[in-house]
Length: 177
Image (cartoon, rainbow, N blue to C red):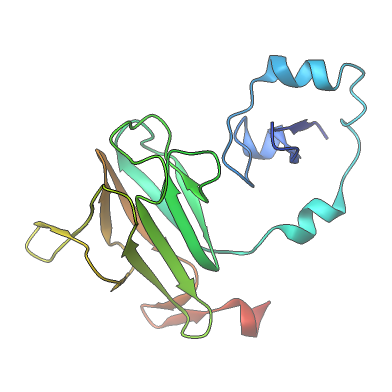
């Protein structure tokens, strides 16, 4: 098993996750990792503590248009801040029209088993596609449904829920985890 370490210290499987840290979405330069682990001592070690802090996924955003098209972003319980900064839970790289911090917030509420979209506290606006195929600016919380389209900067995402009520299928981690 080949593990690599991101600049924030997270170890993860390169085979499973590629060069993007699943904990903080930082892109790892393989050459910089080789300096940190010149003897390959992390290659066969599994750190169970890293698995314990991983919060279960509640859904995903998948980029349909923009510099990161095809990439998916994990949504976890409670607040998920979107922006370009490395400390954002949903880090959108490559789109300079996305604010550095808190452009938008995706919130999974485990008590109500639903996901909501909120505007961030930055200058940028976030939009949701309405039933008439018009982009509506989000100024207050909006409950997200499977397949909703979200526009942040020049990037367009689709919401794919795991938790919640999805076409008669209901799942949450409280009852199933």
